[in-house]
Image 1 (spheres, rainbow, N blue to C red):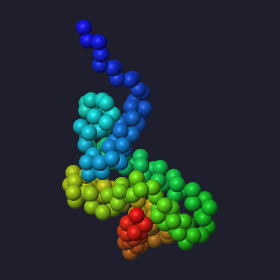
Image 2: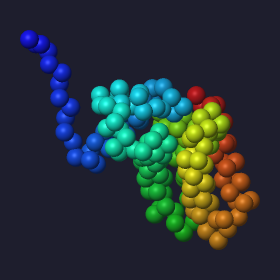
Image 3: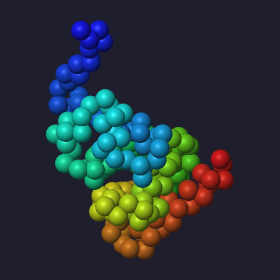
Image 4: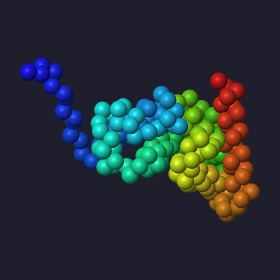
Length: 174
């Protein structure tokens, strides 16, 4: 008789299971990098089958997009605190957001860098998801800095430049 039976997987509600999968994916990415995100690795990290992941995410792109949105939601919540304080002064708001970005935890910096620095070139199947997220983030920062010109390509290029300048500052401070 087997004295060490395989432990049964804990039953979780669908939204709790989805969050557990995202947490496992987040831990995998923190340890190995965004480019190493894969269904097999997440399943192993979460202690579940690949099939269970596919019940919640249609493919790796779907999982990646959900993970990046999950991580960026927490980052953006920290930035959004400034919107209330500086709503009447866009310049001070942008300065506060940049200061906050420079204080971004080291753990989150590779994620932001990956979205803006070409993970889609390293992982071509992620290009569409990354491009959508990148466009959404640039549009969000452009709307905050100048709502009337938010769709102006010149303003969006300026936002892009600000992100890349932050990458250099992160490298410098580390």
